[in-house]
Figure 1 (cartoon, helix red, strand yellow):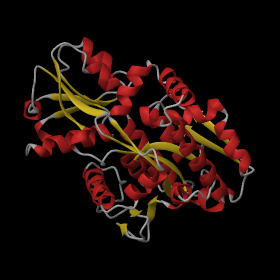
Figure 2 (cartoon, one colour):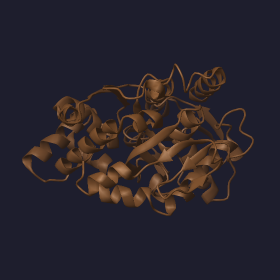
Figure 3 (tube, one colour):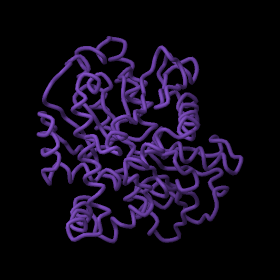
Figure 4 (tube, helix red, strand yellow):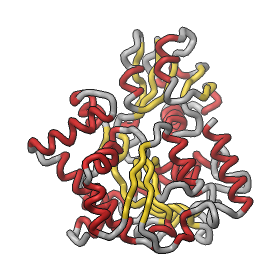
Length: 359
């Protein structure tokens, strides 16, 4: 479902030439009102708190703009709406940023590297103890998502090809009930909070998780590149509020503890449950750490793995003849792929300004 809709959106709108014109906020030039989409996930709960607490308004007021942060219950739908131009920014993973907006023709910038999954994504089996036990099984997951990528990396670690399994597309909303109540569903790949629930199922064993591929499933705040270029105030306000909340979360004060409790409640769990999810999320709590990661030598290597997987699964568009079809730019000026078709940019400038106290 996700793949077919994403490709229809990217190809149909892209062919019509509207992704970078009427459908996109890119040509709005300087403006004052912005909309940002987010969805429930441990590492993205600060965005909900930014809206509810008034901190987003505080930072927006500082730069004379308005930023409306909108929760979308369906993660993929939030990215589709961003790609269609209904939002100026959206939270998403590095792979989804490449395969949906970037592959669809929307020039997009990773403004904030918030975290990477360090155990928040996993593969769980019934009556199986190792990755090799996947051979010959049907595996339920959100096809062509980071779950699919994780499965491919896990199989590769034991020299198995993807054809050794059969994937069954299953929405993230249904995966817990399917695994817990359907006898012949015995292998799933998913992320938290669903992962913590499927691990509780009788005879279930987690055989692989994202901590085995650290730094590869990255959670980002992505904004339209042209909107950001014309409206740097948006970047400053988003980065400013983000690191204000990061400071609160790590302050070990009553106020900071109340912030984390509010996020736990908003995510549908208790404080211990939310903290357990944060424990498997490598948060970049300081802008300096985020800059170091974004500018590090590993990120281009990771994105090469991601684009290779994406091309092999037909996620870079019908016209993509090689994995170089979509260009990816990095903070040091280097790039992967077609330098004349850069559609995904990793920007460290705004995070660096936060690290230097210049916001």
